[in-house]
Image (cartoon, rainbow, N blue to C red; front, side, top):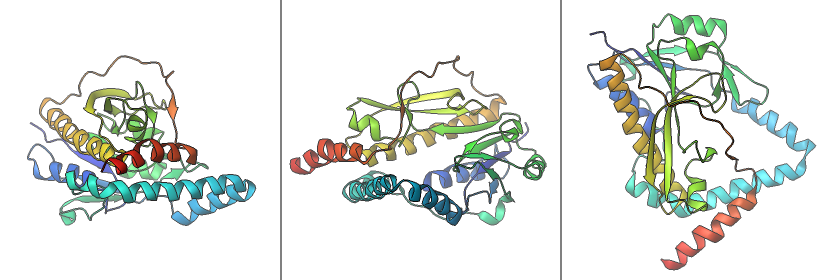
Length: 278
């Protein structure tokens, strides 16, 4: 049986604990070739900041809203992060990839959209990736992928969405379920295609919603990782992906954390009552 050759799209070589665990799983399992790490495409922070600053100069109200939103997120993190890390010690931290000298590292440039949201690979990037003869690519980095990268490997690009796309498109992960008092929080593993929010759903999971945003996000990241590992192992053994769900219309609400008022609501509804109960 041929070993599965898996590539990982990573922003840099010090990714999150969850991404490290996936890479280490492939590295340690005899059903896989050594992982291929595709990196170097991450947009420069200075370039991103320049674009943000230019937009904010034209709209000072947006600047105030973004600044306030950032402060409120830090307040919530300070209140919740320690508790989330008690259950999931590696949560919300990055670390250098283990056994890096045993992995193949492929550096690409990438081509970002003007909004810095969409990412395509250049023809030169695609040629380098194609030479790796990958069976599948796992998206573990930033950017909404577009273009030929989605079809360059036999089983395509596989990605998480840490929310139930039937009720919760957008993000941030784990937030809206807590705020809206939803009893369960979902995640999907999907094969990406050219349609935004229209990937082929390969696996769907649901967990009981935790009582805080950060704890809920932590459990979604941890649990979905387990099922991604199982999906990759099944793919390596059976040489086929699970049958995808049927086509689904996307008429449900697209959640975005655009307003600081939503964060005030979260603090008043979730954080303060929880603190008082303690």
